Image 1 (tube, helix red, strand yellow):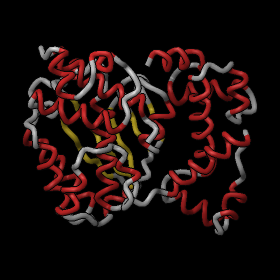
Image 2 (image 1 turned 135 degrees about the vertical axis):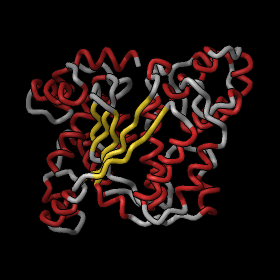
Image 3 (image 1 turned 30 degrees about the vertical axis):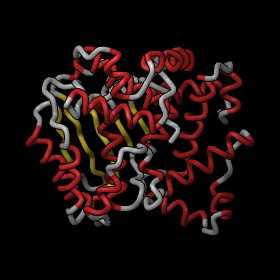
Length: 336
């Protein structure tokens, strides 16, 4: 999972929180097995390093929330939550059990499951957001819920949208890679939106499976060998490769023929995941444009290589997604 920028920010938030709570750098470095220079780095933490930092900072502070909330959360709480969820009959029941568990152990964060006719949403509330100056809690928890839910049912959840109450705080393409659905920023509330039909998916895991799952070796749960990837994810990967290689995107008829289905069948399958071929092409163009802007290419060249017919198309796309112009996004991404 190519999200080293996001993972580095999450790790930095945990390390900075430990320092703010009086833990000396030498003690932190020993706990997470990082040199003083590596501790000061703001980027470059891979998945394995992040998991080591996350595990050991929590153990050192005896707080699973790493000091980002008013009160600590007892170490072992996450495992106990997973144990309750894995014995549920369906994903909806598993999420309800998980949210009830955290309601009983903390008043600092809370989750609510809202069910609508076509979609369901997970809303997150934080009692003291001012304690999380890196603005990582919502992102981290939504990453956990999306990966954990996919693991429970054995297939990647095709997220419809993810809404964050804060401005974009990292590379847009990494948010897209991490959450698969459309990420929106500076929204009124924090929401993770998925097709409501997935709440009825049966749980396919056992407590024996859970013991292997909670080994903190990698956060890339979506690529677990036993988790089937969604059509949305597979198609975006196909489109991304072709855009980068050829500077153009194929028609839906071309994709359908290469997958040995009709274009009508492909459209219907995408519709069940609350997306369309046109929407996925727009997402891929935006993500590629964001990547190229971070590399410092001129806006005109970025627009051309990302498949926009005119520079204004790129400006409109970024304004809709991130709420900023290409030049503003470039400056923000380079600081992240």
